[in-house]
Length: 447
Image (cartoon, rainbow, N blue to C red; front, side, top):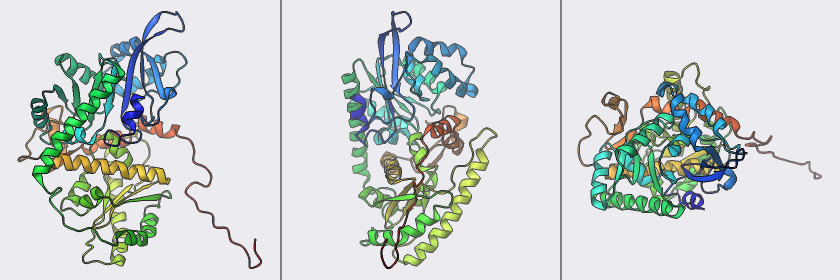
């Protein structure tokens, strides 16, 4: 119930994002004795719709024993093979990579969420400083943890952060998200909501003082944008279907239009998103169409689509080739999954309408994050950035004004993670006629 409440609020997390856990005592099916068990959202599950069968159950003590087997950050992926061996009873749900993050925190109920307002803090060049201001203003004790890819090493980092800060009420993971907890299911939920609302109040107050977002407006929304989008969509969808057929979803709400028509949209789009949950859907970055709606007509926009898609594919392949290793999964698709068009808004693409809509929603979340980071800007950006775990890592992070994106190397490690590939391979095969249209016609005398 707690998970469903959290998962159906798009302020808090998006489809498939975030995870929740509870620790409880259950009778061991082998001995009948009471043992400590961790219940945590299974790999690929969705909080908004998850049922009891969607949680992986694992022996808490067996997970604790994995610390003795851990050979260091370089080998952390090998720890995943032990999760199925730690399963409790008849549980066969695939445990997610975030399992040890929940297991090693000394709290009965834990929420790991990706609220836009929390990620805005996490993705700000002055995020740690602003978190200190937040703590002072709201009398809170939220601790900053620098960026570390989700996995066993991060689990040890956050365990240490809590031990070093015994009064901690939550954690902000640099470039990533939020951890909160409670002694009961209800306390955990209320604590998460309370923290997120306070962070929203903090950021929105900064935003009201800032005024315009993303450097101000450069292109106004077009009144006939829906008609124009309808006219260009066949050309756009066709250009993006070079590897696989795609279906589109169009968004022209206020957030989409403000971002797409802003002065900073091109630069921010090139940086891409920060939260791992975001760019697994949106790719490392969207495609920004350099089109001036005040000067260029629809034919010019269609021509721009053809040239910009070619440039995007080339840049994406270069990104893949630069960071791929012999063990990396093959390049999946070099086409963008999100397209930003000044005057029109956003278009998301996927294998079906639902996936296209969810992809678009994820980038709307990313826009909120960029807007929040922009609102928190209060001076020149200086190194080392708080997202960097070590000072020498700071220069690898890219930023534009106050918004900080992940290093491309880190983005690739997540987008083409062998563990993520395994999740994709577990998905059911598509139906025979998926993404295809059948046109049935008859002769003059009928069918």
